[in-house]
Amino acid sequence: MSRSPRTRAPRTAPGERRAQLAEAARSLALDEGLAAVTMRAVAARAGVTPALVAHYADGMDELVAETFGTVVRAEIDEVVTMLAAQPTPVARLGTLLRTLLDGGRDDVTVVWVEAWALGRRNEPLGERVRTEMDAWQAVIHDVVDEGIAEGSFHADDAASVAWQLLGMIDGLNAQALVRWRDAGARGSLIAHAVEGMLGLPRGALAEASAA
Image (cartoon, rainbow, N blue to C red; front, side):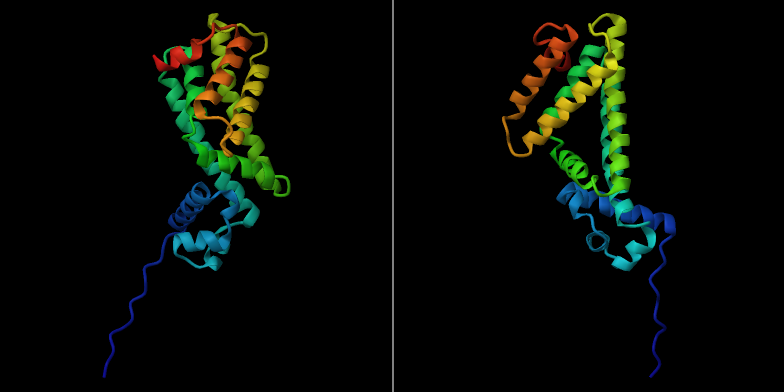
């Protein structure tokens, strides 16, 4: 009895396969944390073999670093777009605080917190963490610099203010992962501190971002 010839599954182009694996790693990191990104887990998420992931990845450290960068860069781009739609530096800064501290980005916060820990021994990841922290500092620096230039903010060193603000945001978001205070309390704490740093009246940031 004759048999029909077996049909092979179509091959996936290398670029398409890389994109598929990158998306699998990204979704895995957001769902389960950066520590969950292993070759076996990425392969299971993508429906391929671990050997195929190993073929396309330059190594486990690089895969984790690239996954972190993909997650964080998407958030930065999204927030920058949101800020560009605001009419004033005060409104931009208020919007920045609200969107980063309202608890809606806890999945990204988990990725950050794990990256700080894993980056101690994963040098490609540590380097990428430093790069993306610089990128966030630059976003905040631009907003503060604009406010100083137009006279809304009163500070001598926009870069130092940006670093302090970034540290405060990171610290409060990390604490929020264990449900220390509620989102409203965290937002009020940092808003009042920033208003003091920049010579703004109490409530100015909340009022501007709400408007």
